[in-house]
Amino acid sequence: MIQIALQKKLTAPHGSMLLDIDININKGSLVTLYGDSGAGKTSILRMISGLLQADKGRITVNQKTWLDTNKGIVLKPQQRKIGYVFQDYGLFPNMTVKQNLLYALEKDQSNHTVSELIDIIELGDLQERKPEKLSGGQKQRVALARALVRKPEILMLDEPLSALDNKMRAKLQDYILKVHKQYNLTTLLISHEISEVIKMSDQVFIIENGKINKQGNPIEVFTTKQMSGKFQFSGEIVQIEQEDVIYIVTILIGINFVKIVAEENEVATLAIGDKVIVASKAFNPLLQKID
Amino acid sequence: MNILEGKITDIKTHGSVSLVTLLMGSVYFNTIIIETSDSASYLRKEHVVKVIFKETEVIIGKNQNYPISVQNKISGALLDIENGILISKLTIDTAIGKIIAIITTDAAKDLQLHVGQHVIAMIKTTEIMLSP
Image (cartoon, rainbow over all chains, first blue to last red; front, side, top):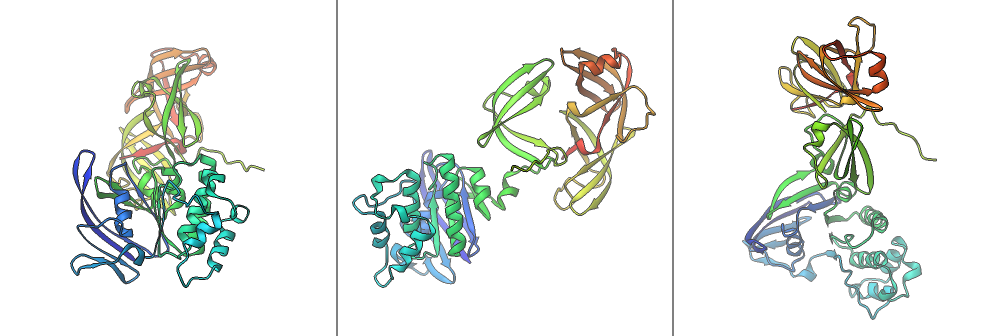
């Protein structure tokens, strides 16, 4: 169990903001922090890693105290077993992939860990290359491997996939899930993408103005319980066309477009760019296996 | 979408599926939904809920007693008919509120519908959604 209680006054774009959270995370779970920019997500990760000092707080990780401001306990970042992956890879440009990983080893750690990670994250063909010869997705795989070299107790991923295209993103998500399970990691992910949160996480915390606004199983948190229809998606209106006495509304859901027939009174309340819930009953859609 | 109001009078649950009976004016509607009283707090006897179904899911008939598997039926007078080339929109004035039906223009012609006429609007049990 990881218990995190943190308080810190932060300077936000619109004046100051009190970040105040108190959360418990089960060991081995993948947890997402979701919220707008400036809500305090990155500050939370930075305080857990020790890069930012909390005004008040307590962090215990598997019965070990990393921070207790009441008792004056503040472990240094290097004393906390953390792996951190940022959006901008942070690889050493003058070192090869393998050297980047070896550099992260602790003094008494064997090289075996590095070769194992090269295997799992499939970096074998890339290990002698320098970062400049890698694609964005490949660099992020190296950054992920490097964050795991010291066998962290918490893996922290600060929007690691937001610079990647959808296909690469899906692949990286699979790598993250693979290492998360294989190393029984406790992983904290920051993400803006609802589909990513639902695919990846056991639990989501929605952060608003430095406070936890909502938490729970991602599907329960994000799907509206306001309607009994179980075939539900959220999307954005991209086109509204009149056809005969009805309207056809085109909606972008994730990377897919769907078309929904709507009636005049409904269309009167809708505009292009509106976020909408698309709902039908579980009884209606057909399923067809793809060969 | 058509949004009417109904009072829940009965809930039969088996596993995660419930068959909900609603009193709508003086007629009863049934809907089958994948919710239970545990998963949806509005699912309680005596609660008034919104009864939602799409215009394209309304079936129009002219005869009250035709044997048919559709359980939810309400009679009303045709208030308006808007004929398109392929698709027509009917507005029906019923005791539980206005219901809009979207059917093919061919079907509307076959039925020889005209404003003021009495028709039966029918909605399948699997097509009705509930909302608090």
